[in-house]
Image (cartoon, rainbow, N blue to C red; front, side, top):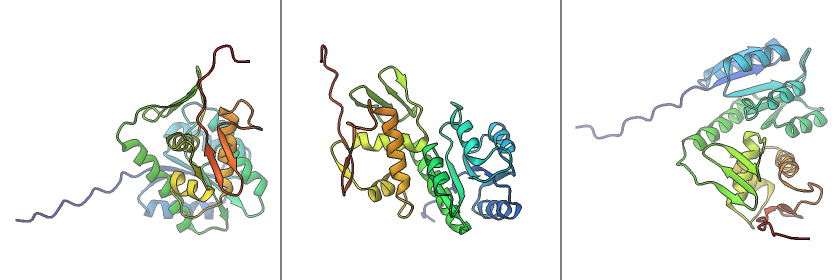
Amino acid sequence: MNHSPAPAEPPAPARILVVDDDPTVGEVVAGYLTRAGHLVDRAEDGQRGLDLAERHRPDLLVLDLMLPGLDGLEVLRRLRARPDRSDLPVVLLTAKGDEADRVLGLELGADDYVTKPFSPRELVLRVQSILRRARTAASAAPERPLRSGDLALDPRARRAHRADRELALTSREFDLLAFLLRHPGTVFSRQELMQRVWGWDFGDLSTVTVHVRRLREKIEDDPGAPELISTVWGVGYRYDPAAPARDGAA
């Protein structure tokens, strides 16, 4: 009798939207993602990309910054302004010299970027990493809500509040804040955060810097003088638990 375990079922294909006005780039990216087992939709301008994002509800968006009509940054702004699409994972395709736009894209909530000219295999690896982490989080055992002062995160519902106000966090911002709340008082380097939150052993560490800055803007009383997410110079970042509110404090 054969007692060998049944082979594991392959993960369900993800639906990925590729928005790039260069037909060659779009075709190559779509081809590699399709061969990796995903369902791929394509758009060659920003407005069409927004329409398809609304109609097909993709699991991930690959977005070129330089697009006719609505550019990639405006597409990203509009997506993040929609409550039901605010946490859609986004990988940007950027030109080598577009550092300012690349940083702005990360500040608007992009999860990662790949610089042109790029290796399609590298792009597929980045996409797979983001999808794998999202699926792992979705299938994990239910976790109790995380609390620190007036901050409350519900990992199961993927919702975060400060006092009575819901925080509009992207998927990666939520993961980063949840990780920090689980490890209060511990200093992590940017490389460690990239490995443990993003799940990547390589990548631009400024991605972490930008996400920390965005989190501070959403949870700190004064982002310019943060009290919750502290910078430990020469080392990295540390989450300092919020003290309970004191009645009658000066």
